[in-house]
Amino acid sequence: MSDSPSAADPQRWNVPSIDGSDGPSYLTAGRLQELQKEAYDEAFEKGKAAGEKAGEDIIALRAERLNQLLHALCEPFEELDESVETQLVELAMVVVKQLFRRELRLEPTHIIGVVREAIQMLPIASRTVQVHLHPDDAALIRDTLSPAEGEPAWTIVEDPLSSRGGCRVTTDNSQIDASAESRLAAVINKIMGDDRG
Image (tube, rainbow, N blue to C red; front, side, top):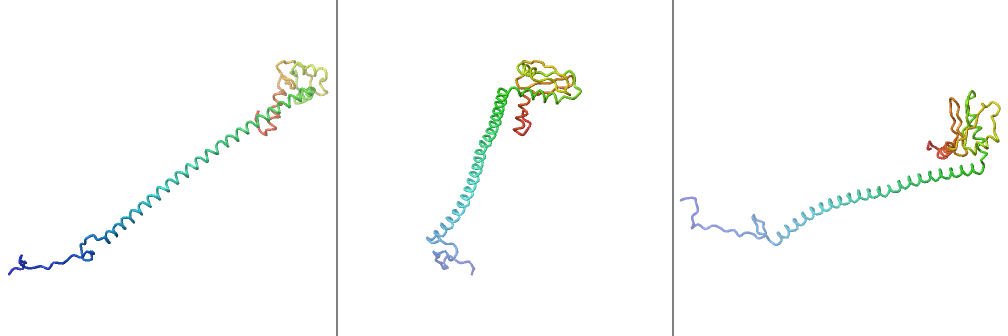
């Protein structure tokens, strides 16, 4: 007798369980619901992670943009500060010039002190001293001032290109610029506290 079952031998048929407890199973409503929940949870977690990443990227981008906007807003104020400072300096210089000219117009005898100071700045052994003055100032100096004791002798040279209220003293070896412009520049530099001219 052979060991192989014949077609006539009956075999036991096992009814498959529908709950999937004994090997391959059929999808039941419960199992289908579990698989759906697992898929949903997995998709939810992936979507949540992707959403958080996208949100972080958007926030970082917007923060950078806000930072750029804030810097851009500050720049006009810095430029405005520089502009206001420049305009204030220019205004101060205009005011000083106007006061200087007004003082010269009201008190033309200031030229006497200017000439005296410029001559005293010369070395003692100076020769051929010439005082270059505006013709109106030259007339005033001729009438009111002559070389003081100890000063070198000097002559007046009328210079129509010189501005009123100042002079230029020259010798063979040196020159003193006491023109109204150079004195005004010195006053402005002193007011501004720097070397602007």
